[in-house]
Image (tube, rainbow, N blue to C red):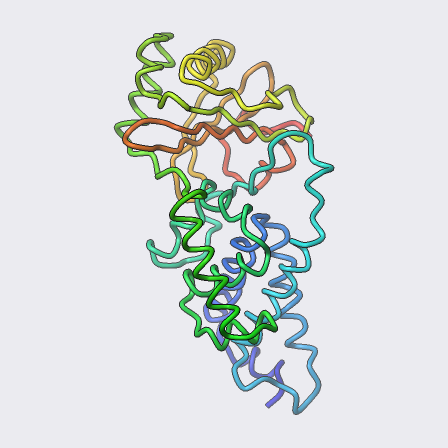
Length: 294
């Protein structure tokens, strides 16, 4: 059977499942949904285009390998120095995420993907394939064209770093979110400070396309003042949204749409991520009237 025939033999649900898996691999490796889609679709197209007799024994493993390599190419070509200010992974509507088990999807949070950005490309890919998909080391080694001991080292090193210096903030519990929102909307500076860690940071990703802080705002008092001021300028244009499996807030301030997410440490907010780059807000289900301008 040809590769095209093998793919055609799958029902729509099975093809969607395979593509969803490839999107999950690609998004974890690149942090960009468009790159993940391009890589997944190119891998599927390459499978269909294989000559008769050259179909892989395991099409899904083959597709995973091709998608991984395509994503690594994109990751290595990425030029962060051309980006203005902080760079965040692209936020996406929770409904777009692959239909995976809940324990698999925790690493699709922005805070985790942002931590992945500090890993080397091969290290990141090896960790994703092992931790998110439990692939055998031999299969990962083939996908990355590396020796098995090297892959084991990459995974071990990535796991250690993500447990220590790169440890991402935790998911924000509903109670903490409510406390912060209530304090900010009430304009209560001290109560807002009390919800934040002493070293809290507000970080904005805008690429200079809209008015946003280009440097991190650091410290509980400065962050609290900033958040209260942003709420005052919103004129009530604040609404809840689902982003990467987490609660977030869409805010319109001075005509600029921002999506805020929280990271927590020891029961208090330690990070507020503001997604402000309009080019990165196109895959979110924003409420009516919150659409970012081009």
